[in-house]
Length: 332
Image (cartoon, rainbow, N blue to C red):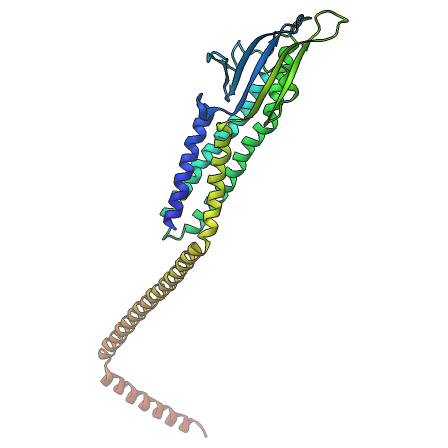
């Protein structure tokens, strides 16, 4: 049982560290969303392809990294002046970040609770230690899923809304202000697709193609799965292990309860013995006091003048007889 609890502790600590990396890293482990594809730029007047470029957007919780065909990368922070139309991304990323931090801290609490349970294996606090461990395992599972669920439900929509806001700044006959372009019309949390971009050069004319995007794929990144899998392993794994060792720790608890009952019986007998001893001492003290009183009585009786008492009794008898004689003479 000790080994299983130590496994829980180790997994929880690793989860805490991995979540910190996924939230703060700007490397592969910090990627929460990736868009990868190619774009053909078309001359709207001739319809000829003028450029072919690949692009990769790596989205982190604080910034995104754009890599072009040449391999050059440009990092843009969501709260910088270079990312004016990133308000929705900021909201979505912050929600995921805060709940991910909470999940990481809760994973650390699970590690502490597991260590506390190891320390309580042979103590009467084992039941409460395992109970607390179970509760925090459930909480870290819920908070971890909440973090990834919030990102799953809000991120794609945040990208779309920010892209719409950016494209709304284009002037008539231009679509230069864009990032994802027409992919916004296809974007979900996971998938791939192709699309074409159009622009109206002059009012009343038909739209003309300005670019083709495809193939383009998009999917959650490693950072997203680190939080999801890490909290699942910590929370779900803890509950699974506690379920498997249920009989073992129940046996330990029964043994501890038996020891506690025996200790209570022993303490009760000891207390009863103390009471009997105190009662014996009190009785002995009372006997000593009684003996002292008897001795005092004996001492006082030795001082009585028994001869004087006999003389008094004789004198009393004489006076009584004389009184009777007088009464006889008086009565006619």
